[in-house]
Image (cartoon, rainbow, N blue to C red; front, side, top):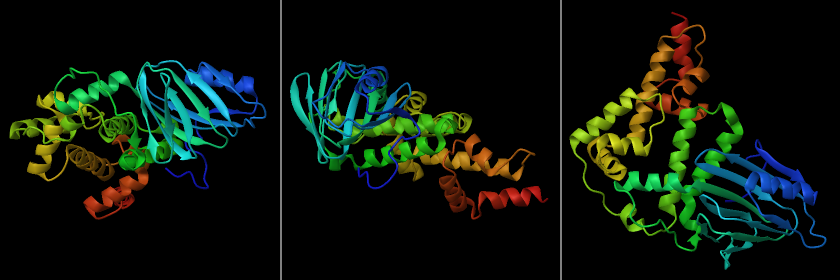
Length: 326
């Protein structure tokens, strides 16, 4: 990830803006659960940190300005740092690792942490709740994991391209929409981010996640389609699709692609576009393109307009204008 000349990620969710060591330490303890902050003499501390948190994931940006050392206790989540500028040393349960522009470790739950941040180091941190990650693994593989989920000590950053694109998009949407992001969009972006984290970082289930899934049947695909048609206004999760089809999500996605030529989530988009068009064709006095998009789970208006034009050959505003002029 490249910081460049720009506003910092998640600036809509400020956590710390201070040069005062006591204020910074208090904020780190309250927001991030840190043990303590240690500063060398003349550290040049000038902290700018942002943080967004939901039940299952957390996203943070931080730049300490000067050199700093921070300690954290064990937690109930996995975490991964992605350097934006420079590199930092880290000790995970006393084992030294490095976070660089090329490599990054996955930090397991309950591991104690010691960070040594040099001046002007910048990073984005992704937190994923351990239970949510285990549930996603079970849904994707179709079985409750019998072994503890363990990641390789270090991941090459170039293997995380898909995860980084999702992170950039998610953080951009959070900064743009904030609390106005449609709950459906938020829940589905979260689950996509968790699944990408699981598949992008090598772990002891990677062979199962990357192998050829068992075949699903036509009735299972139809059941998934019926479920999506019935619950299109709600978040469509991998766990729900696996449960309704009584098989792994990977099997469903594989057979969907083979038999329908698209993924279940592409079918979700198609169903929601259809309902959006019906709303625009039969508007009431409060109908607008924005309210329609949000009601149908589209938080990004540009993406909604693009998909709508691709499907129906006209802009959603044109459909609405014609309906109101009738």
